[in-house]
Image (cartoon, rainbow, N blue to C red; front, top):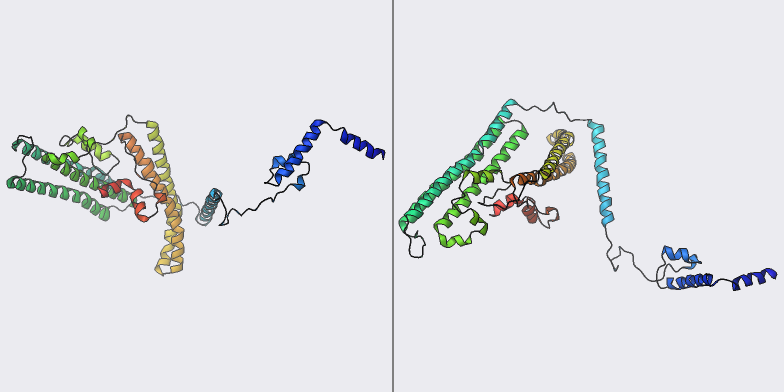
Length: 394
């Protein structure tokens, strides 16, 4: 009886702060009935186990009738982790099965291949300078025609008589045939030499790609100067030329300096004038070259260690037409091919072309767009290789 009376006295003698704390705790419990109770409230509530956790109707976040769409970023991260682990497993499996297949001394670069590759690399650009000689003759013919043509009071040249048109048509036909023969020889001679006399695949591939690039540049140089020459002889149509061309109008652009810049510029489309940067950032160049070198080594390692044994082991399956094994080997090879392709894309379009553009102070560096988000095959082909796309579109 005394104990109860003593406890009652203690309750009565509680301080105002203690009473305020108990009141706040009671209010927190009441508020919990209107929503979920967080962890901080749980710590302050005296009766934690009476908090109303389930206080309203809610749906699962993956349900179709959910009010909000959850983020799937975690699943993406999980897939990346799974992809990395699976490929690491393939690396371990390859090492346990074949060992180290990398052998620098095993590569046989024949002296004939090296010599022919060097000769082709030196001679192929000469076709550009042949095109320069052809265009120089065409420019001289156009300037001479302007000097001999009578002008009317408005200063517009009269090129509309039949005899003048016939002369120009004959001359331009000869120019077109000269350009066509020059460009064809550029590609044909290189292809024959690579096919018959160069055995090493790397040297042959580099030589052929170099010839294709110069061939495309030859075509663009001829087509662009043809249109500029036509605009010179027909001033009424010259207004449609881009404003940037006013810095170097035709035929002032037909110079060795202008052609040499186009030769090294990271583009297949000839213009008399290109957007230029103010200076060369050599640190940027060094970083891009380091990226390109590292990725080239990675491509070599992946090809020698993973692609080569897969291809070698597939020969007997192809000989006996084991379709199931062929499909299985193709699926294995597709992973290596995709990785090598992505590394090659980044090495060429991001590293090498940006380094070359920086050295040449070439301003327009949109060598590719976000092709990885392409909704269709057509969009993909238009965005992954902008230099070729611009050439074909023009």
